[in-house]
Length: 563
Image 1: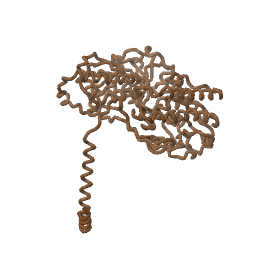
Image 2: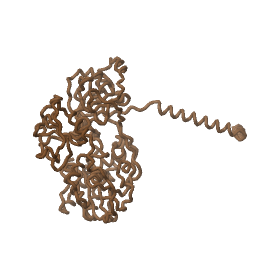
Image 3: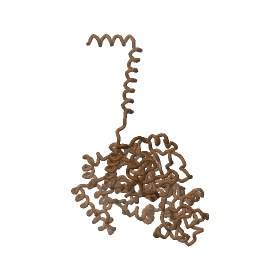
Image 4: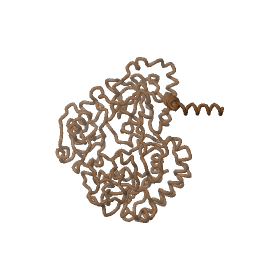
């Protein structure tokens, strides 16, 4: 064997070109084998177990670029009748030939039973209400719609409808998803919903002109929508209506679509339906949208669409169009170096990134960070790249605790969130990115118990340290900020030394979500907290509550306790 190797070595020394040719062929063959194995097949993932790329994220402090995963790619086509379908549009490929070859469904009953067992797993986030007739000329669900002829699953449809605030999600022909606020058709036999989902063979996704419809139990957590417009509520007509809503149009054949289209064309962010009059404008001090009325006062049917409400002359039904309110979108660095460093301090997972988004819109100045996160910089947080002591940003994000770090700042906004929610949010961020989710394997494995054991005490010590060592600390509860954004944001902007412009704050309310918001639908099918964890965390909540009250501050919100 040794002699053979020596001969080969001598041969290739004399003929190096042949050696490199042979080596190149070998590498090419290996590459082809690798590519073949990569395309040979993909594992099937059920809707209830779907998770974005969940590689282990970096620990604190945050460094590097997070990988974000968003799920769907939308195709573009205007739907029949010119009806709006929001940011997603129907695919041009309806695959009519595939409908004609729907196949033999001899095992329909067994597949329906499998689909029903899958639906039971979805109960926490959606409830199956039945199989319904659909009509291509007059859809049963009339919100946004999209197709995916390769990877459609029940969960993907539910998740995307819920993210846009719809109450119902319906699946048809194994690959089509429709969203809506009302089910406008009659029931069909369950046996007629007999097509397996393209992305998960264990579930049923409607049939030919038949919808498997789910009511989304958590859709209320998101903004309610009508197509691309966000529903803002029913409001009494303002006193100076022609000034508050300066553009109007009489529409005898009124519908939500017509009024929203009109205001969008006129480039106004608010569309107000007043019976047969459509009004457009901006949220201002004359029309703040802060005092909602009972929706029944606006429940007059539209002349041009019997299933819709169009308000009355006295009570306006208001929608927010896709027109961006630019009164609060300009941002820049401070024109002169800040004399004081203001911290925006929070425990990880307490909504710091969202608070930065609100502050930047409300003040018009960039916020900075104690760390650097490339994904945040790429999303528009331009102060992320500045050194935290540069003095060019209005405040500095930090998760630090400890006397030395805290005393580096002259004042602070301390953002506190329910520890049960904050811990889960940070765990999702660590293993799934800023808007992703941790995989079930992480929740069920050793990672979650170790995370709670290490991070739960930090939730308490973080707040206690800032209360003890911080100078001029303004405490803001995340839950209060969500509930009453206008008032809480006024407080925060006041600490920053900026005169709060009311019209600008009203603009922020319309742009409040930003780019970092997890869907309210994705919910664990079980409580990840053990009794031992809850007992430990409850003790920390009581400690923080006592510390707040000793400083004559309101204690933690009531919803921290019922666990």
